[in-house]
Image (tube, rainbow, N blue to C red; front, side, top):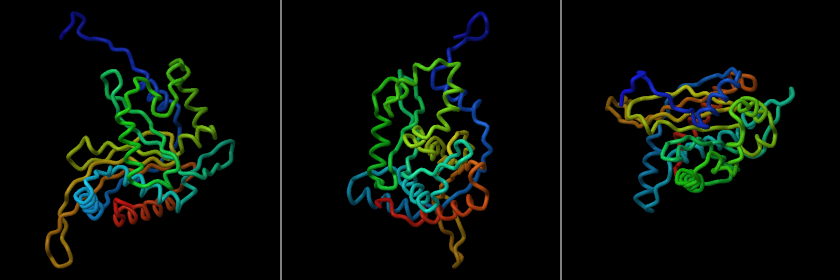
Length: 258
């Protein structure tokens, strides 16, 4: 409906204020790796597992599990800098951005997955789905941190800057993050993210592509589009490349039910 002024105004929600504060307070230089990985084998196991057990596991959960396994082999990725010292975290806690409904609106909220290195794909899948169906009507319900809504908007940037270097916050929420946006696109899509994590994985779309095999026949493969972002203060290009090579190997060869 048009107005006489020719425009309308809407108040910014708390989530949007958090995003703005995060962007304003983040001065990190990131290395981005934009790639696509053959997940045909993993997708076949996914379908076979569903047909055999009737249990639908989250493919995002599978990716997170493979990601955690790779992090285990590269422990320097699970770290952050505090007071000119590198702090290496022992457990692999991963912050996963989950979209859920609050007051009739779709809102992204971080879910902290604890000790992912010891969890199965099913356990990770169950935690993500439980978070998506959470009926709490406040930001922070997923992590028991509803107190965050009490922080005045003008202090959010300061809070995020302090929390980013806080050891207790790092242990609780992790310095590894994953966000999945590919389910909203049917075409080949990559996304360049923004965040304060040491390693941030952005899951894009999965598309079918045709490749010419060695015998000259055409083979259809399912390709996953990914962007991995590394904090350049901690991780250089060569270690990031080795990490991604190993992650691709694990992701393309692993079975979903592991």
